[in-house]
Length: 371
Image 1 (cartoon, one colour):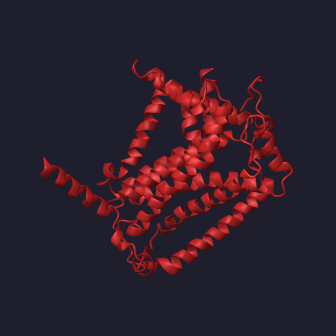
Image 2 (cartoon, helix red, strand yellow):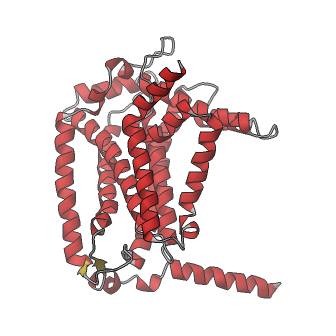
Image 3 (cartoon, helix red, strand yellow):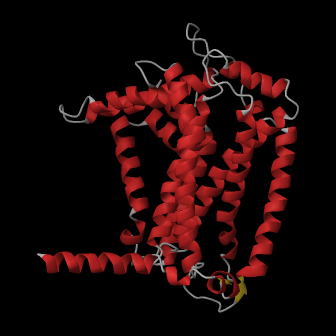
């Protein structure tokens, strides 16, 4: 028995040593000798850095918003209005925070798909991939919890729909487990209905819990990236490389500067809320009627519109399966060619684009046809 335990312990340590080669943790290995492959997909190496830039913008602007935001159902909406209308630079800070959130999720999706297509999850980079997928899930949690904080009509009603979907899962579970989703919903929202307890929980998650989880995962993700270096990315390497420092770093920072100026310009002239009708952003009235147009943020459309058109159990099953496949991709696709992975990534990108941009038109077509 002791030999078996010793053998398994030795294998586990060898596995970790291969995935986290800490002997490479030196200035010479990480800076002086580190090279970045140059090929037709080299542009994808910059996407992870851009995501970090957008997170940094949200972190700084989020801290600035904390000075004025009031996390109570009676004052939340009024405090957001005060920030927007009366605090010097408040509207700009809010716009930067909101636009950076959408830009970060868009960049992370592109980063995920290109990394998948380049087979950057191949041994020994499994840990890099898994932490990246979990980071994306945490970012979606950021979006879900942050959506409620302004406490306006679209925020509260969309959150109600999202939480209701959790409880609906109980319909498809065995009798012994049927009550668990409902209990989970009550635990998340802090009571039988969305209210102050819900806002307090989402506020704590958004500004304390999720940032700590995100930073811990990001640290592990970046450590793995630095220890292993950039993945080859293509089946036939060109043989050309460039030094990580200073050449790649200078290009990365130059791109950050350009992108930040574009983000700043957009935030300065184009409020994110201008894409929606005003009633959706009026203060939430629990006694009033629900206005038309209640939807989640655009980055949840890939689940929202299928839920509107297909059985709940089917969408839940497919979503769970897709998440499991993503997490296990290093083992499921370990023998797949980059050509095959590129086709799968292209199909996923096409689906996300069509559902996000044309989802409403598709929904109206099928709803009208079902008349």
